[in-house]
Length: 266
Image (cartoon, rainbow, N blue to C red):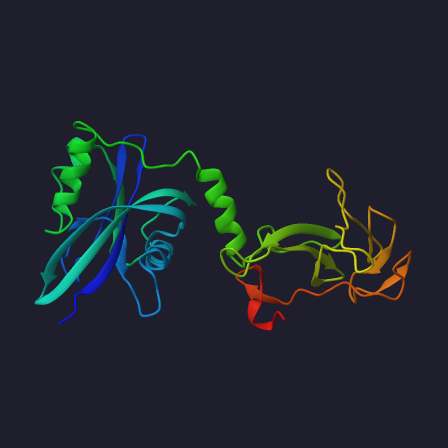
């Protein structure tokens, strides 16, 4: 029987290790472990780590490095656990699963906690690595990793409850290595539209560095050459690109805000 592949994450902040307690009514009840879970078909271990951390503790993993692996079994099922040091994440961890709990533990406390058999040796390795304490896991490259993760997340930050006559600029990518799509989200008369932040007349941005496009009376005004676009239709009705259309970015509802709908994107 092929082993079930599991991805788990290690995060240390201020000398304290992030641990999650399993619910009392499931497998390995009440034990403290590194957050993570099963790698589903079609996922990479990193994909699974990102998904599991969002589901279990509500944070977005932006970077991780392999640290250790362990083989064993649970209830007669063979397991292969891959442990990653989480080098960048956004959000504040919280125990989201019913009956679970979360804590940040210093080494002397973590060593006393009851853990699954496959997690305990990894904890011991971390303590040895830090000569009796825990070494931090955040990478100096974390800001860049977080920015890249934000571009890959289709949700548009700042889009929740978008007020009328407001503008949000964003950059998104369909996949790693894909060309960026730069957009401008506008709120107009209770509606929301997203347009590519590119002039249809010449391939330049609508805004200039340090200056945003203007939204006046339902009109997007290009800061580069003064062209005016209808914020609802994207049609240029004044300026050198009169009659041209901005390229629309399809949206889908996401919580209280909006996300880029890649399935409807050409």
